[in-house]
Length: 212
Image 1: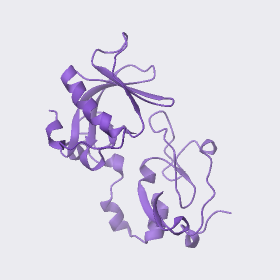
Image 2 (image 1 turned 120 degrees about the horizontal axis):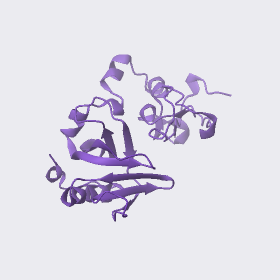
Image 3 (image 1 turned 135 degrees about the vertical axis):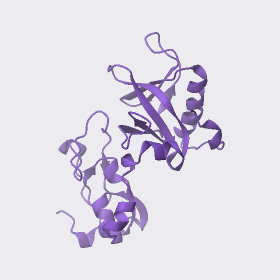
């Protein structure tokens, strides 16, 4: 039976299977090529998108450990009000300028997914989340087009003949993201950060990597 509000976090939910939904069960965003990552709320078991799963709460059934939960369960469990919620912008809603001004690295890169054409994207790895690559259409955009959680990706930095010259690829099982910088120096700066991030590490010399 579905979990009632009073039981949230007190007993383990039944997980809705990934293939039972085509869209986030909270914001109804369809799961498509860019937002393909599905997450489970550890409190209600619903399948939610990246934005709606960016909350953590202590769950009793898991020894009060912090677990990923959806926005609704987060509010029920911690009893938080709407005004506090407004302070907490959805992560993808963070404005590019805000993130870029406090980033480990940011610059334009060419981006290609699967066999689509290359497109220019403003790419940012924010300091407070140095393991996530944000992609914006432009430096002043108020909403990211996509995010790539870098942990666990494999980096391939040798361009094939069909690639742009200063390119590198990030691969994880079936997903492949290709990037290309305007020059080799910029490519190496990005790789320096990404090589750390895929292992779950963050750069020590964060301020040296700002790229204008």
